[in-house]
Amino acid sequence: MAYRRTPRMQQRIDATRAQIADAARRLVAASGYAGTGIPEIARAAGISTGSIYRHFPSKAALFQEVFQKASRHEIAAFAQAAQVPGTAPERLAGMVETFARRALRGRTLARALLVEPVGPELDADRRRFRAPYQALIEEVLSEGMAAAELVPQDPRITSICIVGAIVETLLGPLSERSGCTQGTEEEEALVRALVETCLRAAGPRPQTPPRSE
Amino acid sequence: MAYRRTPRMQQRIDATRAQIADAARRLVAASGYAGTGIPEIARAAGISTGSIYRHFPSKAALFQEVFQKASRHEIAAFAQAAQVPGTAPERLAGMVETFARRALRGRTLARALLVEPVGPELDADRRRFRAPYQALIEEVLSEGMAAAELVPQDPRITSICIVGAIVETLLGPLSERSGCTQGTEEEEALVRALVETCLRAAGPRPQTPPRSE
Image (cartoon, rainbow over all chains, first blue to last red; front, top):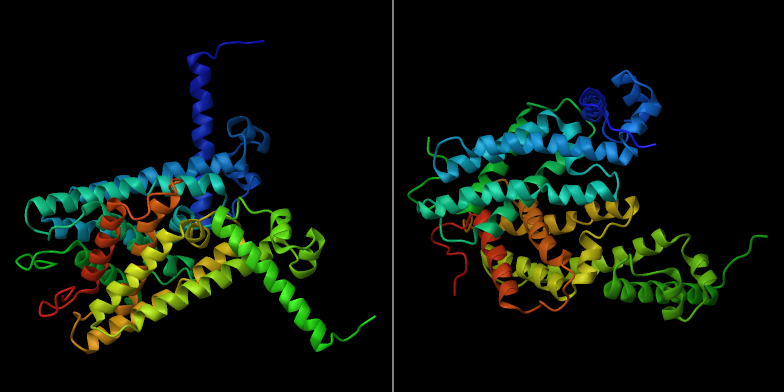
């Protein structure tokens, strides 16, 4: 028998759905996908296991929602870093540093977003969700070229290279199981070297030193 | 009942194993993992399906052998490019170009080696098999720094960045299903831009232009 949901009912359904996704996100940020099961999510959300499946057809679908929400949040932080006033090299440095520091601060979540093996649905999402980062970098590079702050280049390829460089560099620290290396000198050196390499890749013109102090 | 294999028996077993792996490699290079089944491999190797399982416990194990053999072959080509005499920037340019051109020429195999979804065993191998590329690049960068051809840097991080840059840039063309774009102007431009970006990342000193002609 078909029936209409009243606005009130819909509101309640949406609220429960958000509550489940939020509990799942917190658990994934603490233990990764592998360490997060439906029973734990149900417990954390304060509802029954069966209720979860009324909102998400599968664990994969729920993890996909977690991934997408968390990714949008990260992309927003990256976009904000892109808007800090400055030369293109300065802005790029801020963006790369923002990405790296956020990932190293919340490394279980970053691992879940970037590399933790989970399934084909999420692998496709991962690829798709790199595009906004690349586009934001490309924009800054294009502006830098227009302002003669950067050497002539194909800003699309450079931006793809920078995305690849950031992710590849973070995979090392993110795959280590040690949780307490945050803020160490080694980590500082890694972030600094990553930022410098990305800046060199962006090709600042000699009159614009990589980091104008 | 335990028994010893005679050298002759062992030789025949090894030959059959190699024959299976070689047939599998050719099929993967033509159709990827997804398009390659055990029956086709058996047919191509001229043996029965059952015989394959006497040599490889699973399809995953066979694909792992294919991956490892093909990877070693690619790494050898990359190492050879590293040995071409020249300045560090020249050698690095040759290495990046070699990698890119080989991948674009045999893109189904490159896709299988780099990104085609296949399973957790191979994902781990993929990560492990990036290390030799990174090490070869790091060596050239270190030599370039020692010869004052490159600016001071952390050659380990730069080399990780360059590996990430190469792979990320190739993912685009490799994920396209079109098989005949090889040798197009677009592809030439991509290889050129990739090489230039990697060279900038390596930080050639002003007196050493990226490509001394």
